[in-house]
Image (cartoon, rainbow, N blue to C red; front, side, top):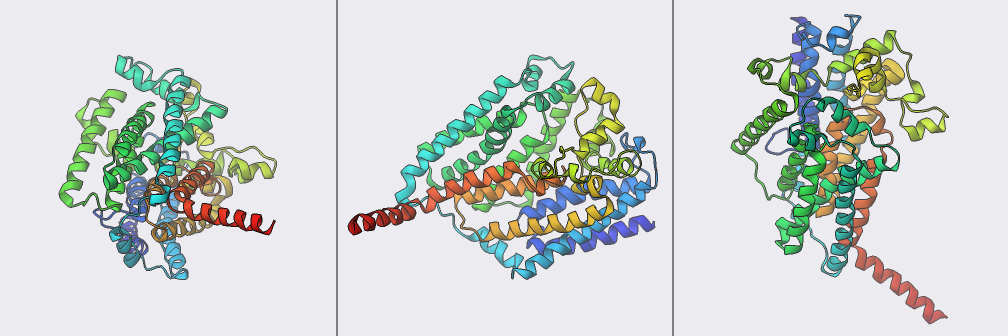
Length: 463
């Protein structure tokens, strides 16, 4: 009863703090902080954390845990996360004079600024070049993937789908990884968001054609390895773009329709991909889709605590991004992979064991223990709040909206994937640089060009 009382009090307090931070926790007015709270923390982490702390999870991962005391220790750390994270964001917001409710409301109602007339032709040319690169990157990824799980499923070959999915994600190496991860997986959906916004704003045939190409390519790259979450997150990206541009007005009726449609699609994917047909599996809280949502993501956190406290030494600098680890002359090691090898070695031997990703403080603990958890909570919360403030205050153009949508979806996903990406993430940096260049072409190229030409003319006159 004490554990549940603490959980309930924490949920109430955390909800209040997150609402102060975000400006709105209403699902009909979604934003980055809203998704972090509902998806990354409450649903994916804290509900399952309660079940594990109470000892009623009956989940296969937790059964591999050797020391039961980490049920309570893990719950306490999650409770600290639920309070300290939004509290840090609130302090950062106050430091920058951020009024979340007013600024988010202003952002939603601010009109979209499309490309300046003088830049329009050049912007379309640059965007067309990036579109060609992305579509070719998707095709290249398909060619370099020895066995495409989606294609095998459509052919009816379902005997080794689990192994094929691991091979599809880990079977590409070298420069091919960067082509796939940056230009195919990351850039293609974001470009489709830009094209979608321009299609809704201008109705031009050019944008309709480009959006169709990018939309189809995005569907391919988000489903080819049969991972279930990417396609859902891509659809949410489109919905967010509609909300931010006021093309889509959400209400509870529409949200209910989206939830029902998503549930039906998820059930179909579980039946087709994993062969789950028993009704009990879909209704049980610790198996099927429900177990995947509330327990599969948080259980590895408890395994991290158990593993790095007794079986594996803290990774320290090896747990940092490869760029930073290289400075200290050590090779990066992902804690989630180490935990998989320690807890499920038989799956690794069979080729079906990948990584045991979990809430980001799991990786922080694997690197630096309890101190790492507290420091990482404060650091990550501050970084996210600064990004949230920046996105609400930047000019509201299709390119900036697409970048905002990208981080609005990818930050919550990364929070349940690890901590290292918040210290150095080459994909995020590359995406920001590419879209910053597009933004300049979209809005300010003629100003920069005029300034440069005037400087050239002045030099000629002096000569």
